[in-house]
Length: 528
Image (cartoon, rainbow, N blue to C red; front, side, top):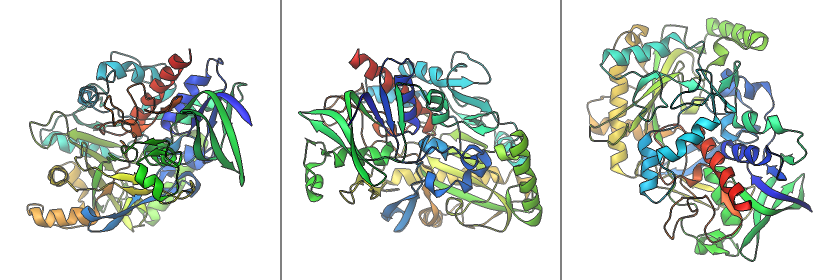
């Protein structure tokens, strides 16, 4: 049986940051346990191969049938292996809005206001533009401007300007309002995942043990304290012990699953699966929030967009060769190259719709292959009112949990999404984006609420930002307190997006890394 000071469960965005910071000074014996592999391959590292990343790097979860989506089953890709979802995502560097964090503090997440979290964002960030009041230049997470954005991505921004919509050259100031090109988590033309930032530089360090292909079955709790984990690796069951702390960072789906398998969760639900209850905590697996998203897709005669044609195939073949030789060119694309943040109504405290422009046609998360060329524009509801759940499907950790985002359960979410979809069509109709002669692949009367709502329910799905299932707060029902320690269990912390009391107004990778950074400091303080 192996003994460490700290065990970190999950090598994703939060777990990589937490493990790296806990191990870097050499003072603690740290074991990072990851269910997937190393993700050390060119398809993960090449940004433009994002649609072709191996299934081994993606859990490819699905939801239960969604009544708000006309009974459809939604798709929930989640990263598997070192880097987690930062190894398969669109690499967009977004923190959210100042309002998000100030609102967390108002809700009882004391010490999590914007002023509190900004130093951690800056500490994690290595922005190639340099450091300033809002940005860090020396952190391990490399952030850079895109070098080869598509002409259509720029045209989307210029068309927004023609409608007198605000532009921005920095989405990561306190107010993220406006339209522009996104910065990306890349370095020298390659994907820069959280694992490449925090874990790989420490590989081989004597106090840092990285265990991949190891499935955590449960956290071992003795006398009210987390003392280790039970894992399954190579068909064998093992125990790994921790004298100081266990840090759970398996993500918004797997962290509550592991807590429930360990006896922490809704008592009645655990009993149904034969799990002995350690702590009856109804909020474990509850409060699931996700960005519901609609993708408008347009076919275009211009073959400069990504697509399927002889010219497109030849162009991509040359681009792959260029990237393999020089790490330059269009294979550095994050696909979601430009976008914006916009208020659907004037009294919103912060933008409530985010747009992503993709210079390719998308159907069903890119899983349906289309002939020809074109572009897509996403609109997502940034602060949804709908709430869902994660529940056990089995007492076997290898079985995917039951995921129910409960999309569009609240009519307010539909109102916001409807407004966002209508703005996409307005932007598309304005030059220079209109010059690409995009033809809507899903024609609908945009002025007819009922028709548009039916189209949205037929086609909307996640944009991959689930949070909230191990909610942080100061109330008695919260799963973790504001130091991220699990209520009711000593020696156990959570360090991923599941702790967010409310979904941030933007992509969740950078905030998850910030959470991991903070968790490391909280654990260090507790072990001092």
